[in-house]
Length: 309
Image (cartoon, rainbow, N blue to C red; front, side, top):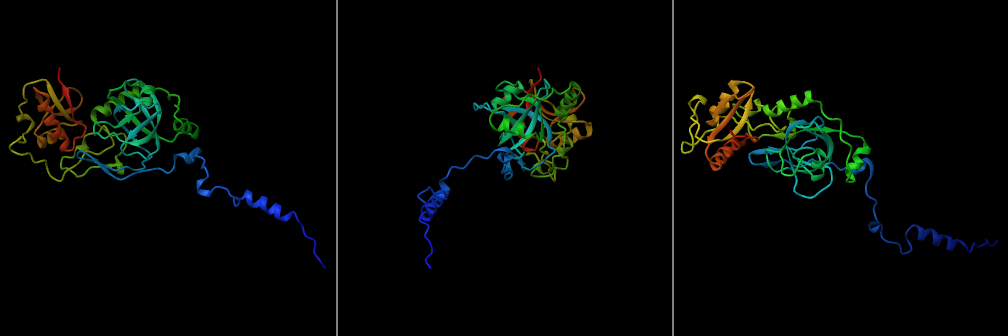
């Protein structure tokens, strides 16, 4: 018995195969791929390897309760995105930035590693600086607190938009944060996010930090060459004439300040609530710069030059 032949099968098969890409369609690897959207757009998260700036080694880590005070600079690159550069937070992640002078608080996206200087906690994009009310070239006192915002806000920042500012930080909390900034006390333990290269006998970590980076500690006191300076007790140090000083660190007790000053060959003063370890005064910036490098080489990354007038 002869079976009937369906003459339409070859045509149907051809149409089916053509739709599957076997009839002259592009290779699969050349097909356009839709960009990631939703929560997937924040992955993969990059942590990165440790790196060193000056005498400080930073170890990026996924620290959920990161919370610190410090200073923020503004990027020179024209960028309207509301983002920041940070040394240790995951890329990407999200953080609230509070301007300690005004209380204004905004949400930002951590997108790049930096800033590559030790005296700044973050670098703001120009878009973030504008929203926060910080002008170019400023070093603004800020608080950085890692947060986990809803996807709607994440999407706005990813697309180059901005999220409405948070409620202004109350003055009472700003006063507390400013005190922590002056005394360099971290708001949260440094943890593995940043680690010093050594551990000191008179550890600067006993003083508070402007960043979550622990001050480098050493196993023995800093030895100063006789050709440069001789460690002395704070009482024996005779400041040079001038109106320029190097402020090394602030301590809550005289004993810790004296120990640090003796190690460095600096002197101690108490203009207010805290004990300050300082070099100077100096008559020229070049002399002050040399003292600044000495302080930073000893692990005091937040040391800075100031004028007394």
